[in-house]
Image 1 (cartoon, rainbow, N blue to C red):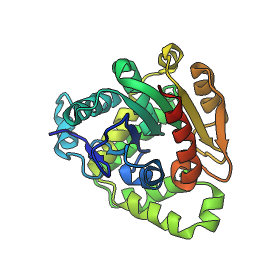
Image 2 (cartoon, helix red, strand yellow):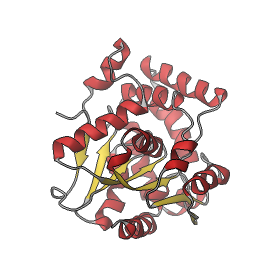
Image 3 (cartoon, helix red, strand yellow):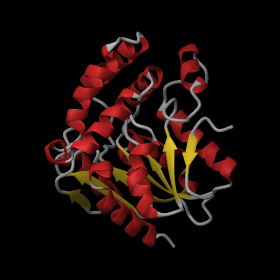
Image 4 (cartoon, rainbow, N blue to C red):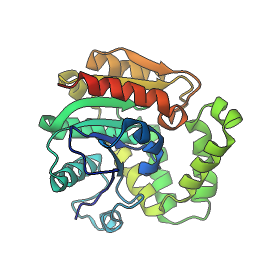
Length: 268
């Protein structure tokens, strides 16, 4: 059985569009976009989140091959696609999902038909950013009581646009609920994996597939320069969505679905 959970309406028959979520969410964050994309959309739960196998994350403490690495995540995605009998995919990832999509592009380029990168960046963490991630991982592993109620809620304020906080209380409360459901072991795994990721700018420069790069105009995590570097590396125009933040796929699902549908139309 695959380490990852795949969610879809019906077994995809065409070229599926696989959606990888942002940290610290499971595939539910893509549900609004997937609903508009139709039956060939597949939402994935990252290692340890949602319905994905929890043991693979817990065992990472003991040095197994499924240690905290986005390469492991990308390889698990490839293995899960094998089980479904899917050879090639259109792959879209938000934030950590984007980091993983780039790892997949490097490790399994023959399986990539098109790439969507949303609210993410190609560069590695600075030493300071990596240290912050590792400290959150340590707090999660210690199962501190405030890991969800404080650190993650503070994080949410950076993830969404002020417009969302002001005008869409129901969505904001749903995101808070999803955050509070994030397993502490999965949080630790993901933070360690992201802290260890390499710069993959050169990977993007070597790709020759249709691609889109999307940024929420109010993104408080990844900068305009981060997105422009990705777009320039892929040779595409950055698409900016107004009144949305880092979680643009949740805040503006109709627009993101339109962009991904346009990407799908480019694949022969």
